[in-house]
Picture 1 (tube, helix red, strand yellow):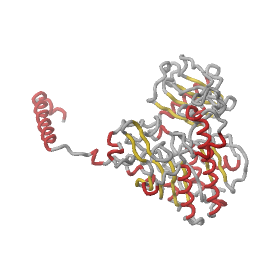
Picture 2 (spheres, one colour; picture 1 turned 90 degrees about the vertical axis):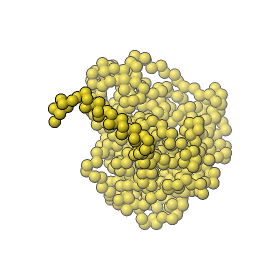
Picture 3 (cartoon, one colour; picture 1 turned 135 degrees about the vertical axis):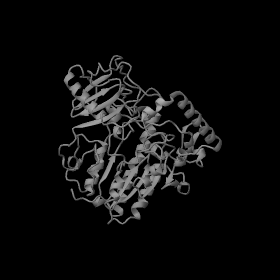
Picture 4 (cartoon, helix red, strand yellow; picture 1 turned 45 degrees about the vertical axis):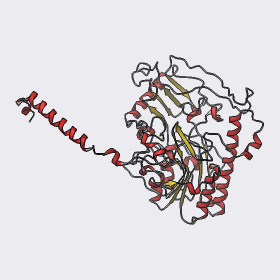
Length: 479
């Protein structure tokens, strides 16, 4: 298995680093920001190309695009067909970030894909492109295929025929969500059939994974877990997935070991017999033996995140963190069975499934939980209590201190947050109505006009004369 050559893989090409090591620890990359995954972060497709893989991406990018160097084709992919933003209309492929900031978002490599857009629902359109890629590729040559479906992200849209099985679901959002998921299930099946049809399947590893929890107000459900997308509760950060391959030793098993998204990078590079530079600090581990053979995970902890600029908890303090950590800061860490949260972890309700809601087609209900206004720190045994109902922070202060120290250690390695303000030059109206790269180096090095330059020169001379008059001879003492 260690010598396996991967022929077909779906995987997220994000960094092998924690957010605190990329500067992306706050929120998401907005389309109007001059921001992207740092260019010095080697991506998975870049490393796989080094060992002879053909690399292709279909679907949602959402790693920034303000410069051409940030585009998928500059980050390791031979081809790219999909969207640059985090969401958009499934049929028209338009997206409004705010009033007056709207544009088209479908790309073929580095250009708007006007000629390839037939108004097809994106899940089906992306599947068709995957089938075309496999049909034209020699199965004897290694290929890395990353498919980032837009579904089931909002807006909630699906072709009409997928609603037929869900007429009994009263909640409209949940019904739409179910229809979208059925279409996605069909897409995964069609991709698998294509792998078989074109001779890839027997030597393929297929990895399917979500990236975060669901949004209950938009049809998702994390029940019985606590919280939702965008929070540090288990409902927001725990994602399910599967690994499928004829090459697996232990089939039909469930892995409950600690595995983090950063682990895919070293795991797949190792399987492909690639090399990871010794000077690169990895936050991920090779977990292939954990997944394929059921061995213990080499990972003992996960830094979920430390966000120093998120809204501070009003009641947080250094005192509440035993002088080790300021509990006003939003953070979460997992060490073996234990999970510690500080600051404002986000919306904390347990939201039951909306499938059987009798509150009306546009209503949603939840099991309300009121957080104590005096708290800014929580401790849970996630193995025994994955639903985070019993806070153990007062019962085990020693464990709390250990995890706070680990947080502090991680924080010492953090880089500054990269979250620049909105830039008006990003407006698609200035780019032919298309979302795309807009930043140019000459903006940064723009020379002042002649009049401005003359004024600046005169001002500089006046300032030097004033300094000389004030300082006189003593200024020479600086030598």
